[in-house]
Image 1 (cartoon, rainbow, N blue to C red):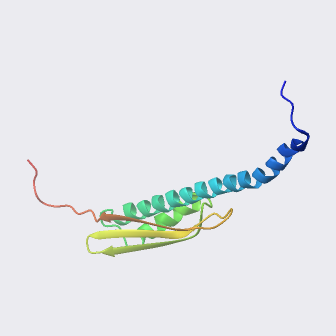
Image 2: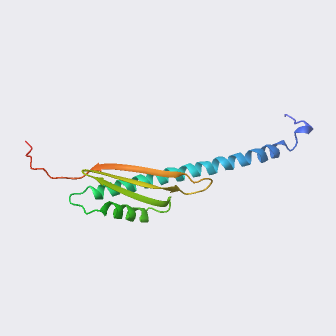
Length: 127
């Protein structure tokens, strides 16, 4: 049997008291990183929804903005204060969704952009 020296009594409690804040910090940091990734995914999906709606054949202006807004309303609160910007430049459509991630320790800015081409029918025949 191994005996501890008298001077080592209570050292486990002191070690635990020192390590416990570090463990809590790592736990909250991992939750914050997960919230940031979820916010990025929500922003990207909303931008893709906006581009998909806006690039549809004969889609009226503002269709992408409306669809992205509906998507964000149903996506939960992972993206705080979202702002959707849809730009239609000739045959190109781009949508940018910005906001902030949910805050546990810190809030991070999130910005995602999707691009697409407007659908057009052509009279060319394919073989």
